[in-house]
Length: 461
Image 1 (tube, rainbow, N blue to C red):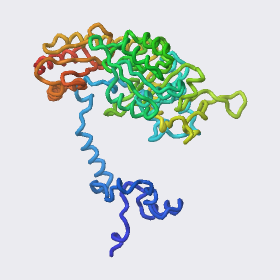
Image 2: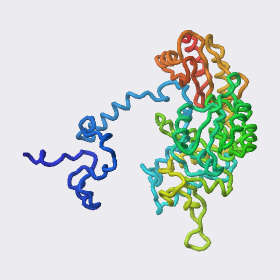
Image 3: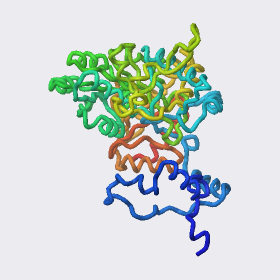
Image 4: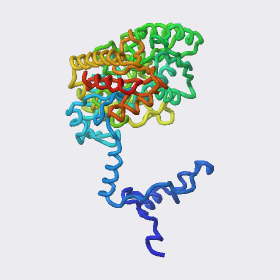
């Protein structure tokens, strides 16, 4: 038997597969083999064979070339004319944002605890402060994984505060987000989705009132804009209904709207949540997300944040202050298995990027970009409504970025999307057999929208 047969081969770029290294690790923790770590997994669900994976490429050059070939199969929204939105948006990211987040003191593959580098803590405190100003609240968390998790966490917070079980979803909400919410809040909460008014796209207040009459509702959840892009005029009335029933009002919002539109706190929201991806974070093929949660500085609300909060804290030197965790004992990091809810690795780097973006934009810049997107959305809706066999519903409602399109021709929404793609255009996200949600942002021009309309005229019938 040769030495290569006698000894298991080490993976060329996974250092702890070196037999001597693996054995040293096992010896250190007192385990006879790796199999001991899997003892609690039932045998019936064990694979009992190696994974069906190709052999590792032996050199860094080969691996790099292979990855480049795989990545070349993607077509990004910068290569095509894209009208995709629905939670991950194409925005201009100023070059200085990338310059800052790629600095060595910030860039890391993990959240990190660089206690020798308090600049990161200050940067995140600055981000929280600007977000709080934008949202008109006092408390904003260090970002969690994404807006979906932030929503689930906000609803769980409402459940712990009220001691109730029910959650009523009052506005149009993305199907993927609803799935994530249901999964995240179970088994402690039941989610009831109230269908919106078919004609207006807005919340059905009578139906929400009926859902609340059943009692035991922890929270009414609404979005601004909704999944259909609608800024619902009934948002303040939903707050009144929720509070009259003893429930909290949780509002998911796109923070980029808040330079031009009122923040959730102004119309009664107890907890605001959402995704900061529109604030200077690249789409990253759908992965550039991070979630925020925001409340008033009220003990019953703040005590239920499971995620980290940074603030000004005293140091060992009298009269000096630094930046660090506030009320750390309430977090799952401190309480571990006794925590009210587990929150893992923070998307802290995205928080720093969003902070740089907000500092660059300032109040006037946020107002201008919000008004620009509102105007472009209105133009796109008017222009597409002129296309034969295309209907743009909810005509009277104010829309931001996203908007619904319905097709009345022979082709389905999926077929139309495929034909648009053949012409170098990413059409709207398909939401039904004859329905799609399109999106425009500040990166689109009038000519881009006109090109979309002209192309639809050619293929939609």
